[in-house]
Image (cartoon, rainbow, N blue to C red; front, top):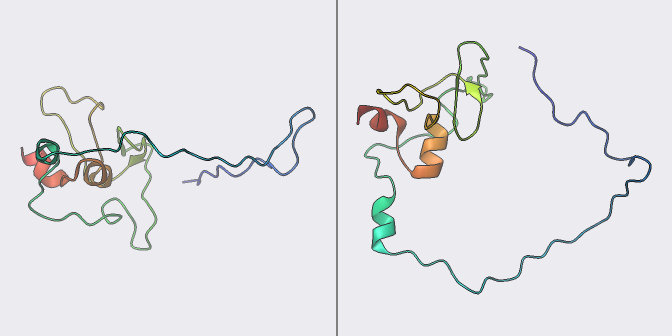
Length: 117
């Protein structure tokens, strides 16, 4: 498979009429701090077994296994990869399908346990 490179465009010389400005982005401190309660904590995932990131769907050298034909698309990272992912036993739609890493990072749940439920 051919690897995709998103750095093929040369951005060092701007096109005529376009200027690149050095802009410093400052985000002011918020007026309302985020406050979490026990109810919020109950909504988080509660995996019984740990999930190791960047192992499932990866080669031994740490490269992700992309497969445009046999891979399934993750709803969050939009990558067609091999590996475990959630699935709906009723509708079998892509919406709501997460790869194991995205499910763990976003919801704190183990994909193997989620599929058993």
